[in-house]
Length: 154
Image (cartoon, rainbow, N blue to C red):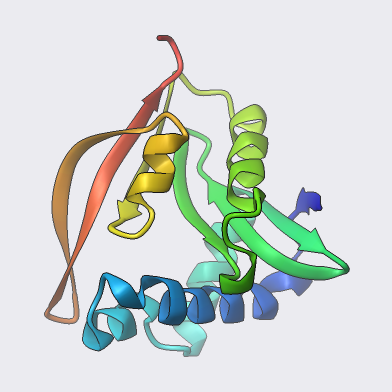
């Protein structure tokens, strides 16, 4: 396993991994309509927004045998925006390694995220606690996720 900084040339592979992971891993907890709005459109505006945020955040990719198998990004204030690991690479330590790398790279008193129903147990195992459940609306469709935090001071 290799964890390295994100490069702009990684974008297409990362976006594809994101879509495939949601369609396979998250399908047990969300409806097809919810999955579709979560993935969102694959238009120029969406691609530009993603590329801008991935470049602005501390973003790391996990590679195995030359292929990207996961990625994660965190803001300068400690908000973990995205964490996705390929469906065939789940439960192999990639997500843990990505989070650990980001937490070492971004100094914060507290790390936060909005975890999916599917990801909640993983984050709890990583020391995050649920602050509240919330409903996020996208194109008139509601998705449940959990605002979670990990307090570093304790």
